[in-house]
Image (cartoon, rainbow, N blue to C red; front, side):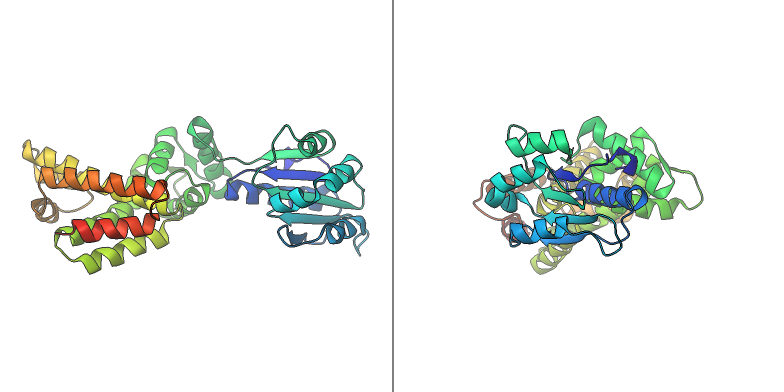
Length: 321
């Protein structure tokens, strides 16, 4: 979020579920006040689940030692607001000019008096997860502003398909891609396939190969690695494993229809001999059964019958040859 989108207010509510966008917004507010508000000190941050209202308001009402206003951020502010709603509504109606109060919260319903007050007197900035065209636009803009690289529509969609919708994960991959392309001004779909697609397939196919070989221990170890390194969390890691089996099924069907291994190997970022050995470990019915079992494991984790990690561990043990 650009700092020029921030208005000069004494109260802000940064609201939403996207931690990356919220962090960007908080940084933009601090930058705005550092440039135009004369604030030279870093913000004071409080844990909203523990801090008392009196301490927060005393801090906001106390001028900085350098003579300017103070920035006070209440992190995880949902419970803080719930405990102190009436007094916060009163304060936000007439905030002091000695400090800037910022609420970082997951939700703030628009029909509440506090929301309406901050929207009128201060600024409410929503940071919900991005989807569709908004996600693609963010990726293009962020690639240009943060890394100085052009990212066309096709490359953006492919990157989102491989990585997911987590802005933190997308930012990490854009950072890698900007280094990967070097002095070239643009990140192309081919770059995304070469760097991101290749790494993802190596990780996922490591699990499927170990399962097909009956090496349950190795498959579980590789699964834990994927789970630990997937910034989008367990749901994304499960989706990656499902993608791996769907990819194997597609390659198997193509090979049985007569498509040469040389052509298929390029789709799988591997060599023809490795792909031939990989596909020889599976048959179509086996891959279809594994996809069905994986779907059941995923549903169980989403219904609260199991965690994603334990559901997939059970899947790997049951489905290893």
